[in-house]
Image (spheres, rainbow, N blue to C red):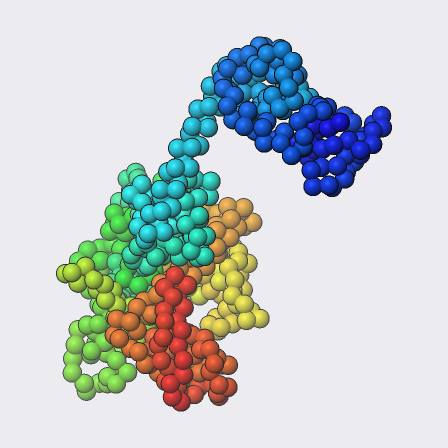
Length: 618
């Protein structure tokens, strides 16, 4: 006696060796014995033998017309032996009955299993839907195979182009396109992103990084949107000063300007004038929401993403040739640079010059600053006085001596686009603490620290930048900034570029005008703004660092610097000379910090922003 039985979702045949009520001991065609539950047995038969029955049943099953089989079973539940009799005729042999079972289980969309060996025909509409789904899957499989072949051949499928950014940065891993990419990548034993790079989907790595950043950070669009009108107060007094700004040539958001005026008593009036977007961007307006959504301007080599739309920046930036709304602090300063008094005012300030570093530093630099008998140049008197005052302010903060070690250097990146469309980068070093930098920095430290103190004394809520125990943090609790050597420090001097400064400016205007501030102490919205700003500011800084690293690597390639010098920082970490690029050099011997080494450039990994190099000489 032989049996046809179901086990673990499959079907087997075997010869019965021992039989009990609940189980059977059986032996398969290979001689292997096993115990089978009697309830799992679907069919008992004598002929044919085990060596041929499954082959014959499979051949019969292949010839069964599935539609005819489905139509033969009617609407009610049935056993497979009944359906075999209906399809093959009365008394079907074992091969025929097994063939029906094999055909039924091969087409589950036609038949629903109701029990062991028992089934029911699926409704016609269900069969139709299942067949349509099967046909779709077959088409999708064929399409995926075609795309995979193109990718393996080094070609981007045309259908990928409209959604290439999404595939690169936010792929839907259930999509056909991504599955084709993943399959092609597996076939070549590389990551999907590497495959896309290899087939030319990332022709410009800088643009790839930028688009990824934009999709993650500005999903609504890169540019801030101008919505609604800016309504400025029409009763702002006009300041009796001639203000000038000092900025890099690429700066369009001119937040701050300075003025100097001799007083009748022999003292000097120093004016620090800050652009006042808070006068025209009212709480709850669309532009106000933009500030709280974007939180800061994003800077990176050759480009920037402004916090405010260009139209709003044009209204508030301290551009020369007009009187602009400003929040001003006036200081009465003695000839010995003692600050005798200060007052703050909301007004319109005439801006008569926008000085640029590249123009003015040719005349006002480390060698010429403070010289009385040197050649004259525009704004010499004002720059000289403010520079000397800045030196006094720096000394009184306890920061007059330069930090130990080599001079700290900042770098400016300029990306030029040639007529051919090629981009070339210039990296220009700028020693930190130059006369121009010191002048501006000290004036901004002064105004931010004094306004922070004013807000604290007026008991008006504000956001302070506090440093103690080596950690800098944003908080609503006033406290010292140890690193700067000031009692209080509240960012207020860049309201066109930072949401924190914008918020503090709203509070300052309320304090000056004697009106109710927007934010009160322990305001939940104020705490939320601090958290959001910290997170966004860190993300923006990371992106800037990433792009600067990319352009440093590009510069080495652009200038064909196959060998370059660097300085050991520690262990195998070095800093490349002339740029802010740090590298790990494999195999670098242990050398003292500060050792100069020559490195040989080997291979650049643009996606990982890695550079393989080796020691050439010490």
